Image (cartoon, rainbow, N blue to C red; front, side, top):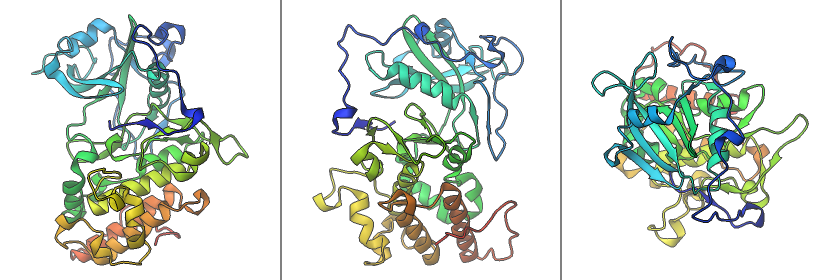
Length: 386
């Protein structure tokens, strides 16, 4: 899921565990049980129904509690050839379950799932596992990856997700943008920002805290979905503007006020969205040490183009070959610039960001000769749209 690093700040440092040290047993701080507190679900249909477009928040997680033996069967014994990816968090394995019961299934009869097996030497393992269950286990939205279940047994921590066959947005930056430009009719499945807007608009605001391209996964239709809620935090209490927390995130995506002070605002997520939007426009990564020294940090390099000081064509992904509506590109660049404002209060809300993206989509459709298409149901124009 990318390289997640603590920034150099005394409050961010934690003692490194020794090789003989593992997080406390999950049983010492058990996660919420599935709906009704009944533990494992053996019948019925635990597979989540399609999330409503507006999303919903459950009172308690509705998840399957898997046994370790079941997940061994699901992943064929955690065989190396089943590994989909790995990082500091551990490994992600491919597996198969019955669509109705979520019991282990043959590959010819079941549906594919992703099983994350956390690294027990990670000092953050238990905390992030619980955060994932508590946050993602209660949330349902078309732009959030579905968490299907969990396992905390024999000092092992595992999570089971729907399978996202196209991988992460980080690995598809150039081709993802080309698809959006060539097929604007398909923008509903390319909707960006809906997941963050949902988190920010819920009764108890949720700050995602680690918005980046590698945490945005794509399904078979290239629908983007947020994954990995291990660093998510509840928003500020009533009357407060921010929460104060240890500084942890990914270099190039974290908002400057958070890096400098540890103050986390809801609009700190908006900054991260602006970075990803900039990646989509340029086809470049947020930080790349292989680029010339003055271009390694994408935001710093791109600011003169975003503010109109240089030609926007020099900023755009050259692989597009100029095949994009100039007005739409200019609107998107201006939107990214607003999201990347140094002051949280100067950034738009995610609701306004989504509305601005809808306006940009309309410009794309007009440029391709779709002027007579009816407006999308529920679409609204943003007063802050650039």
